[in-house]
Figure 1 (spheres, one colour):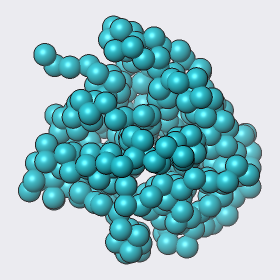
Figure 2 (cartoon, helix red, strand yellow; figure 1 turned 30 degrees about the vertical axis):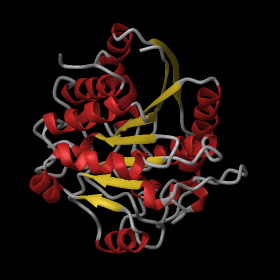
Figure 3 (spheres, one colour; figure 1 turned 30 degrees about the horizontal axis):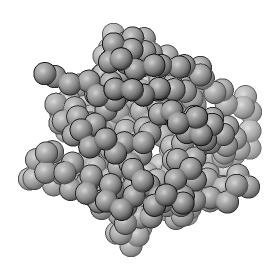
Length: 299
């Protein structure tokens, strides 16, 4: 594969209730990510990590909002630059609030080329805003924000936000979605494949349908992968554990099928918390999933 991959880490855990995912980028790198990508024949550039503000304003309905907005703006600028060079951005979190910045940059870059689709693989919907969120934690808001359902402050930095068409958005693996959040997702028209539907249809059929929704009529697909989508037995190192998730093989099948399409433009891998992990088991899994979405095959 002739492609230059640029990695950027975000040492951010201010969008979550538990500390520790700020060390996620290091854990994924230690999991062998860079060497694994180079073994695929890819040129890899590592931009290092973006650091959050040490202090910032906060509100009960948007906790640590100043730090979250600042780091998303910085990430937006970095991802925009990567795309302008024709390279593939891999964003390592950090909590999932950082997807607001990465997706905003990708959506803006492809705004006049048909826009993008988003496949959001996560145990959670991340479709809250400041009014619907029961916790005020902003890692539960980015998917809503990038689709124009708020909070706008997560995606608007003076550039004129390019919102993603909700009809081109897919959530896969949800099994812990807040009641108000569920109502908002249904009202917006997000395509959702919760864990019970994956059980019924199988991951092969689910990812086929997801690719059709997000990939048809768009410039391509951004994949935002929260490692808590995977069942805790395989991915214990994450802050918001939810039982009975995707098996590791279901997760690999999803990213392998995405890789085969050639439609993936960019990706996030987030919510790896090495404080809660077992011998970097989750960091290694995250690294291998990134390798697979960039072309690593079993045979």
